[in-house]
Length: 123
Image 1: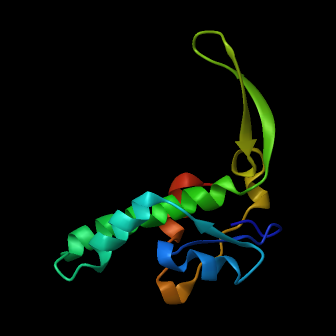
Image 2: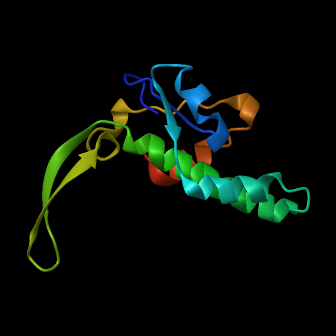
């Protein structure tokens, strides 16, 4: 998602993780149990088109969130509603959104672009 980081995120079926991790040094393979359920529904011949879209969007949202989590962050202290200090981090999506770009893959029908816009409207 970021031009300078050039990081690739992908969701890969669990049986292919070992092979995928050796493909590229910037490849991040998501290891989420949610994908097994989502892929089962997506690939089922009995899944209707509405459910296919629903489960596909859930998988793409997970992928977009994970890719965003790999972007640079900076420390940020905030005051909670109970006046406690929380020491967290802000993503470059929050601190410098102009430093991030999303590259649309047209052949894929811009499938991830909507999810990226939902989590980072300024991109």
